[in-house]
Length: 377
Image (tube, rainbow, N blue to C red):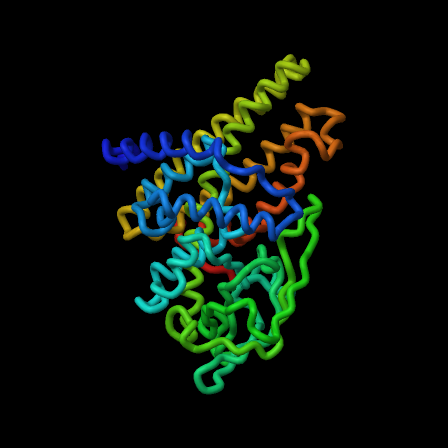
């Protein structure tokens, strides 16, 4: 498989670098981490700048390799991340682009691209654990609407979202994977209650969402009724395929910073620490190559990432935790100081073996869909 870039792709990289170099110094200061309305406005403002410059649709209306270059270069340049609208730009938007009707694409994609709307993800539930298909949030037909009742948890940025990509059970009698539908739910609909959740790192980007007979138009269903599990696999392939690209670049940058800090504070004299840093360097270089391979595969198969994203997610989650455990060794006693670099990142890294599908689920996907091993009984 050819992992080199074409002249056209390198030209895109050069033009993007030049644009970033001119626009990034003009950005206002970032809001404080706890100011989510402010962060929403900041993130949507950045998306509008991308849109006006012709980069707004790169996450789903560009070849996967161009998307890879975009994520690599914006991270290297220190550009703002998609932030509050990562669900809309990286998950819901690509899913609607791939699975939605012409009317749905015309309705929902332009506002996401122009930086006008934020989406959240209503997938996980308190009683389902890592078994997403065990969800219980119920939706029953009433004329042209679904009436939805239930609850969701770990709903990213629900308190500032306009829309929610929502999984509901539309046929409780069907096998659990076959009775699910994928809905777009307006977050201002009557019957929705949002309660923010505070994480170990002290942030509150997640929320519980309670749904009490919320009416969602049938026209907001993406895909056929009871075909939501297949649509969800498209969403998760984007979540595990290319959504972490920028974070791999960021981890490689952090690794270099750790090496410099170790040289400065004397920890570099420890041969065990040097070996750990060297192994992590090899790990993230390999993950970057795996990312390129997954993107090349997606390009050959119509733009949707394949199950190789689960291999990436599995290894990246562990490598990220190893990176920030090593950061704690470099910092020594300062690793308990929340104001020092990398300390809060270490706390947030603990979630990566759970977020976007637990490592146990990724092991099962790799075993069954890549290795062809039999399903467990």
